[in-house]
Length: 256
Image (cartoon, rainbow, N blue to C red; front, side, top):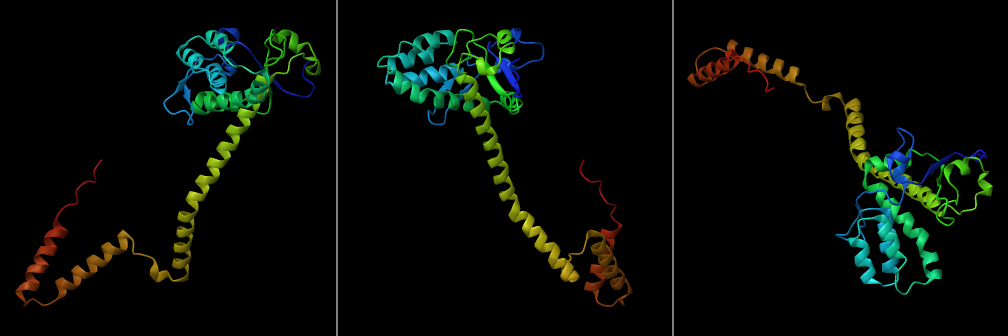
């Protein structure tokens, strides 16, 4: 019923046991255990997107004490509880900053691990849906079974986490496209140089360097000319002997 010509990917828990065999959608959860960093915060390692979100909340309101506790915590549930205790909290300020903060956290999370990145990009253009039955802000306020039986237009929640993941996915795609473009630009000078050399050879075949076979034949011809030269000069005779010794020396096998 929920599929109104839109493909959905549902997720909620952070454990593989909560999903069908083979599904890796549990990595979409904010609570999924992982490691990533933020270039804007050198030396800081985050262990979940939830920690990044709650730490950002404490930092936004200048609560360094709670920030330290959040960074020391290892349980995402504890991080979330600490985030609710941030001093100086202002709802309007948080509402204006929270979505972009979650987008960035997930961009960094999935961008730091090739396997996680593959899972997120592998969702294609599907709408990602957090089926959190008790969360009507970041989730849809319904469990997956109920969501599948309900038209998407009637879901009570805003699904901000799902939308943030979709935005992070799009940013990762743009990043890949930009990297591909940069690699192409780096390769262009070498390709142009190679094309110029081929053109020059086509216009003037004499510019084509002799290959090893031609050089060997040329050397043999020169050796033959020396052999046919009349003996007389001791120096020339010595040169011919030395050359003959080189020619008689068996070739060594190439290095393996």
